[in-house]
Length: 339
Image (cartoon, rainbow, N blue to C red; front, side):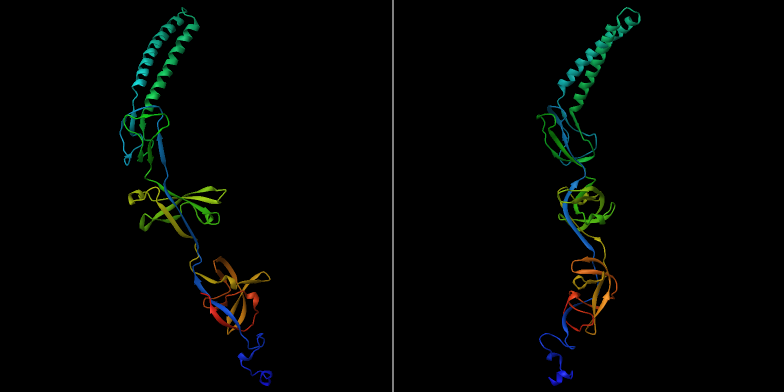
């Protein structure tokens, strides 16, 4: 007791309360270093063809000829199949014969009407008969044209659903066509992340089916509205034009992982070691085993770490736990490190 009163006792002689000048509070510490605090975004979706067409029959009939197979590359306007249109052609021929007769009748009526030998009513009836038959002939030509199945775009035939001799009804599916020059990936992106993406931005896309180097995709468009249930915004990525040649196919799983708010080399401190005093952020710097309160300016927080914009230097040691439990000038001993 005499020695303690004189101030000569060793640190281990403190009471259980920890009172006394030489008591050092155990503390966890962290060294201020540079870290990558970039915001990481990851998502996956299926590869899709930008344009996929289900080619349907426009009229009923029997398949007379099939000129294309699944896997064929076809150009817009190419004939893929024909239906038996003999009955429609016969109707067109009969209508054309009646129209020719109506045209002759109209010409005679017009001549007589000009001479005043035919009433206007009879003349108008002859002209109407001619026009009706002309429109009827156009109708049969259209129906005959419906019997020829043509490709609506440059594409690959990915499915064929007809054979010669089969009967089809209007709107029956005949072929499926897929554009091969533009494959896309449509990602659902959080409302918090979509603000960091923009049209034209380059994004690497990994396909599970094609291990190796990623495909260099580009943000083609960002949809204007978020899904009301998931609150995700659709972002469409366009794969390179040669993706099909590289082996990419609709249905393949695509994965995207990138830093959308890049902060690759910033000073960082433990987020748990930052507190506020009168509206100012501060940390405790540990120097000579004592706490020194330091006002800082902080940036973003990623997980357990917060970006330090100003107030600290690389290599300094700070308290890694809640500063509100301690006071400036307090003596501490480091019992653990946060890395």
